[in-house]
Amino acid sequence: MPFGALVLTSVIVPQASFLGHLAGLCAGYIMAFVPTVPLLACLAVFACFMVAVGWSLWRQHGAALRSYLPLLSGADVELG
Image 1 (cartoon, one colour):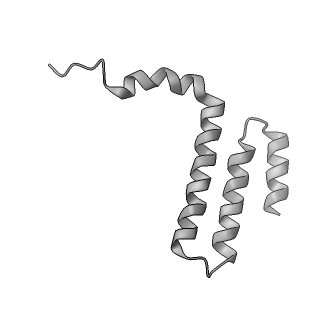
Image 2 (cartoon, rainbow, N blue to C red):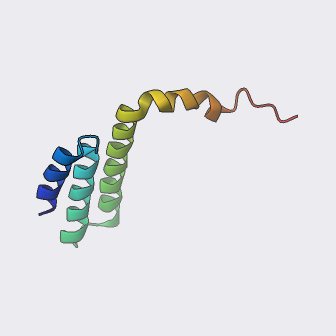
């Protein structure tokens, strides 16, 4: 059912990140239905999920994020 909802949502809302939601579904299924997975495996799944989300955000909003990078570096900030 969640995968059907994912497909339906991607048809209705084309701006939604299909890859990010798919990674979340897979991570949720792995963590819910594999109770013998050690903690490090869960952290690896979560790390993959976060990489997928970050990549999706960079792909969709990369130009806007790059315009803020000089502000985040603090190179032009004077504290005097």
